[in-house]
Length: 129
Image 1 (cartoon, rainbow, N blue to C red):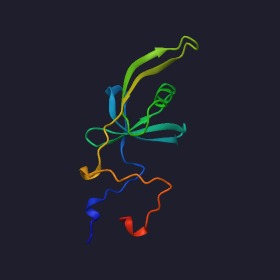
Image 2 (image 1 turned 90 degrees about the vertical axis):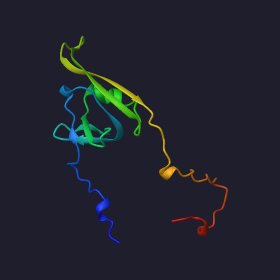
Image 3 (image 1 turned 120 degrees about the horizontal axis):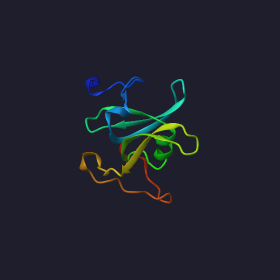
Image 4 (image 1 turned 180 degrees about the vertical axis):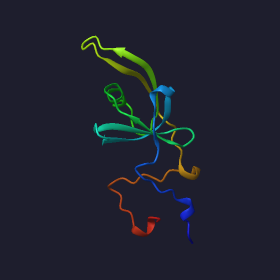
């Protein structure tokens, strides 16, 4: 039986980069990619409510704030505009980064499998594949 119509092929080009001028971006934090592009920046991959994959380029501000966010959390990044650094006098783009835990759902609403301690022996025939 050929189920290829249910599979989606993933490539590096999947998704789009978020433009801060379009306002806030919100989605589930999927992964952090490092050393991307000519500046070897970080890119934070989010999946939004429409299930689109969106890449958020890392900046000094975004990178520092995203350290507190775990993969799987829902995150919202809101641009606050340009600010001037008191130390250097240079301008930079500032962002609010907020997150919350996403509710966990079991696949097919089935009970979670029982936890087996390391001391218990399990027969190979008792493991379903």
